[in-house]
Image 1 (cartoon, rainbow over the protein chains, first blue to last red):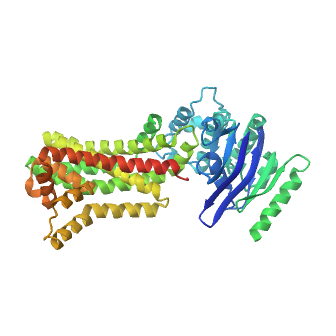
Image 2: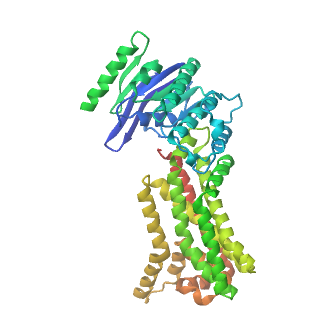
Image 3: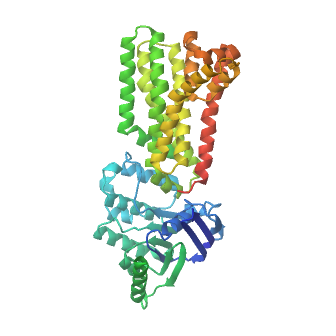
Amino acid sequence: MLRVNKIIKTYGKKFRLELDNLTLESPSVVTLLGPNGSGKTTFLKVLLGLVNPEKGDIEYNGSDIYKDFAFKTDLGYMPQTAIYPDNLKVKEIIEITKSLKNHTQDYDDELYEQYKIELILESKFSSLSQGTKQKIAAAIVFMFRSRVIILDEPTAGLDPYASEILKNKILKEKKDRLILFTTHIMSDVTELSDRVIYIHEGKLKYDKMMNSEFSERDSRQIASEVANYFKG
Amino acid sequence: MRKIMKYIIRDVARSKFIFFYTATLFLLTVGLNYLNRDETKTVITVLNVVIYLMPLVNILYVSLHYYNSKEFIETLLTYPVKRGQIFMAEYFSLTLALIFSYILGVIFPLLIFGSTMLILNLLVSGILLIAMFTSISLLVSIIYDERIKGIGMLIGIWLFMAIVFDGIILIMYFLLNDFPLDKISVILIALNPIDLTRLYILINLDIASLFGYSGANFIKFFGQAYGIVILLLVSFIWIIVPTLLARRKFNKKDF
């Protein structure tokens, strides 16, 4: 569904992201792991069209994502820190998202209802806690039934209850879409992932399908590998 | 683009900064009206506030708004919207908000005090000045990812245009007074948006004593009617060129 073809992105002499060939199939939940500065965010930004690679391209259903709007129409993205204009009300943030997405189907309001967003519709975005802002971002990202959903550390700012709701939503929605997320929480990997991709120093180091038989063992293996990298 | 503009303008209109800025301009203009009984003197005093203070506030506000909106812009870039449309929405929203603030804070109180023709000139020059400095500010902010560098550069540009530029011209005239500098001085005016605006209003007010050496040469060279047209044309170039450069940079930028 999403095919990465020999992507290269360099930041000065310090960092180089270099991914040869990588295919992300739908439906599946793919976890992107790696230490800080490993290239996860750069890879996500390349996928989102925020960063232009020097070489290579990414295809979505056979079309180049940089030339065809189809990918962005099918894309939902939840940033690590949800930031919208401070003086807008929550209802205006949802309005602007709906108007720009040009979505004609029924909205998926499950997270919107579970997080009780209707109670804060009149609140200014700046007056909300970081956790509440993340709930709004999560509700928005699933609202449009996007075929590809990218989540940057989605559970990091959420309380345990809200985090559980989001994880249940991911498990429910993974049946017919591609969900790619980054995390540092290993329990999220074992609970949610079908596949784990581990990036270090801009290169793909580990790419493995998870299943019930191997998931626990593999998560320990990945955790230990990450720990070893941190130790140097 | 209009969909994005609608929400950026709402956000800006509700900001405390815009409220206090408009209120300050309003109180300043009302105060100057009471101090100067003569309409022309009032406009000239207001002109000094407009051409020196407004560009500084303009560049600082536009730049801070851009840096504070970067994450929101990143989110917008993941929607099916063209990059150029997001940039133009940001440009027009900020320009319109600042123009509205200027009209409420400066033009409206002057109208209450009964000024007419001179106000139209002040309105046109204020709008041009806001549009010019918004485009310059966005260009610099897009070039510099680090907010401190971007704002520092913009303050430097303002200092140069508002103060240093005139000093350099004075020194140049003093050192090179044996050479014919008439044509050069005409070109130099075009290099500074603040000088362009000042001269535009002074030509319309027909106050030759305040033209300065460059302004006097400019009028001698083009005449009053052509002079106004040339000043307007150069002002438009100062709006269009930085805006197009900023949009081009924005379209290729890594966020």
